[in-house]
Image (cartoon, helix red, strand yellow):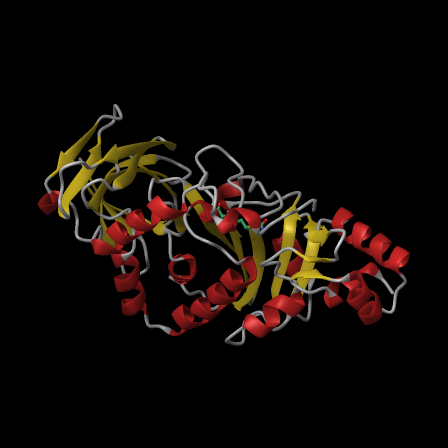
Amino acid sequence: MDPENVLLLLPEGLESWGVLAKRTGLGLTELREALLVLRGQGFPVVIKEEGAGLALGTPAPQILLPLLRGKYGRAYRYFGVVTSTQDLLRAWQDAPIGAVVLAESQTQGRGRRGRVWESPQGNLYFSGLLENTGDQLLSLRAGLALAEATQAGLLKWPNDLLAPDGRKLGGVLIETENERAFLGVGLNVHVAPIPNSAALAEFRQVHRAQLLADFLWFLEKWLEKDNAAILAAWSERNVTLGREIAVWTGKETIVGVAISLGSKGELLVRTEKGMRAVLAGDVSLLRMAYDVKVSAGATAVGGRQNDDRSHCVRARATSLNFSEVGLRFDNAGRSSCADLRKVPPQWGSRTSDRVRQLGHGRKGNPGSPCQKDFHPRGP
Ligand code: BTN
């Protein structure tokens, strides 16, 4: 039996050697060899004395498919290492709409504007096939699905997913070719690959296959919604509007305050010279302010991001009794309490809840199970 077929018979978590040998019809030596080959191909196979299997949350087909709720992801190709899932999806000529290609790592992952997307093992890298309808809000729809599936992120225009302290958790790349659109998603789940990036597992427990299934389900839902609903939902969930920003359009940098979204999803920026509409670009948040509800003794976490460098700041509330404060960070990194009435409404209690959750799931918490669910190299 080919290692590829053995892969499809592996359970999530450990199973005894005896059961595995019976299921695959292989002898113990052959079985162990097949597992080592699979691990060498980049699949998260766990091999132990007592048995073997796939690391918890592995998005192998037999684990993902039972978790799917909608149409997307039912045509599915799962790889260890690829150049870019975008390329593999493009090459899949008869892929139906909703088909998904996922890889455990990529050697030539690409991000928006020709950037490299670092793709080590432990995260999610996948591409989904959509109809190219010319939908100008597609990128916002994808961002909303990402934020909803992760339950931990905030959106920076157009679809960057940020951690509460401004570090990047994930992003979406949309490429088109005739009537096909390739929606690529990179989400840092267990590994923050570059400075100023964060991993979702720092904030919550994550099961990668469940996360993928949730994303595909929410994407399907957001694709059905009308434009007004998308613009309203995005405006509620973002960290761009109301902020001082700099947008690099590829030709110029526009500096001003992000005011709202236009009907095509463009960012309307008030500059010194008047209003500008930005259709595509990279936003840097020049100042970030976090409003957090903190109870006495609780730790609040905030941060600032300036010119793409973010700094985490922790503040301890000692004498507050469920009062509301806004932690502001100026350009020199100084923090101060701010009057909440000056903080835009989108930083409401949902942010506060997320900040509170953060206190329980941070990296370094010795009992945090999310740190344990991926073992790329096994024991
Ligand atoms: C961004 O720049 O924020 C978007 C990053 C998108 C990366 C994903 S990973 C899966 C897919 N394959 C790629 O090569 N890129 C996208």
